[in-house]
Image 1 (cartoon, rainbow, N blue to C red):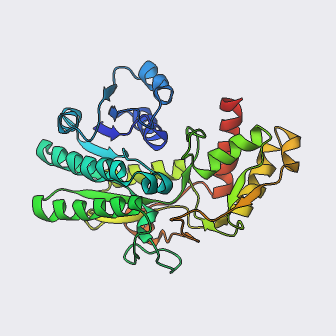
Image 2 (image 1 turned 120 degrees about the vertical axis):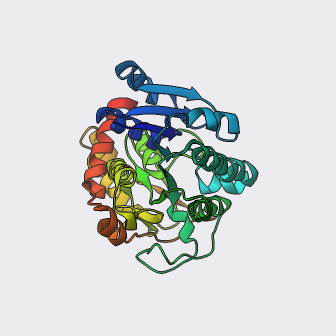
Length: 324
């Protein structure tokens, strides 16, 4: 049994990680300032695992909060960040403060506390304007947004801390993660929960562009698997590395809409007749995203259990049960 800090633990990915860790017997410290996380994501964990679950309301931009959170911790799963390319274009200063200064604070605190390994959420946005497909970890392009810059700087800091201080890290470049507890509300909601909510409300979702842009949509349970493998690996070649965290298939936005209509119309047949609208391409968006997961397979033993369609079907069921 380990004691694990999950930063951003009340958020979408963080709360799923907290739950998985608690279910397997670990003790969990959750650090969150609730800027984007939600208390309802962790209330069941506080009730069912109160002896092994500790909530710290704090901000990674405050060093004292970071130091308090890492006390007695074996591993850090660092999920706290301000996501969203559009948000970073609108407010690059805050994105920088959270994603770079906050990240550095957490690494310093983890170093000083003697944490065994620092696993962090990197991002597929780091590939920037690279046109090569599939995306391979060692080949990146120029960043296309302030958000992308911050996530690449995280990787650089982690590498320097490993070489300078002997810290162990693993960075996971997430590719369009989706699943239960992903917030469908707000100006920066991700495409899948946003479209689900709109279909359920009999609204026409708006596709940015002609719908041929594609993404490697990755179900949350595959992401949880990757975090567990990264935290627990004893393969020395696997440590101090960056890995794509994805399923390894492309889905266009038009295909996504077709799948959503298929799954949601099983609950409400009227959804099958709702057609999307189309608007301009969003600034900072890359046309296509597809990950190679060969490195994760080889070094971590990663074997994603959920295809995009299987995950989407499960996610639609969760949204139908929880949003209605």
